[in-house]
Length: 153
Image (cartoon, rainbow, N blue to C red; front, side, top):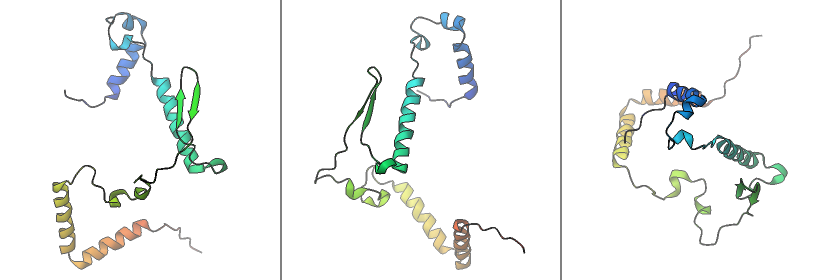
């Protein structure tokens, strides 16, 4: 199967055609567009719940930043909230929190070509003249420094 890139023009044309009742009536009975699957409302609902959870973690209203698992059920219109449970003593996740690549875990294995390319770049950088390396460092540091407005008096 060959995947093609998303085309805004094609999607727009399909959307315009789909809005025409005559176009829908002319489709075969088993066509995907005749299944009455409008998942847009569900996608927007899931996105809004994600935004609300992110805001809760950042803002922490009333000191609550993690309400635990929240599961919304459409048919009865109920939001289940599960009380957060801590890890068991044997859980290894708390020790890995915020360690990223420095956690010591190798999940997908080593990428020998990437390691070789990184080493080549490191050696090339070190072999450059010290003046160029110093200039690069100063430039990087100046990009991180806060910009201040200079006003003439």
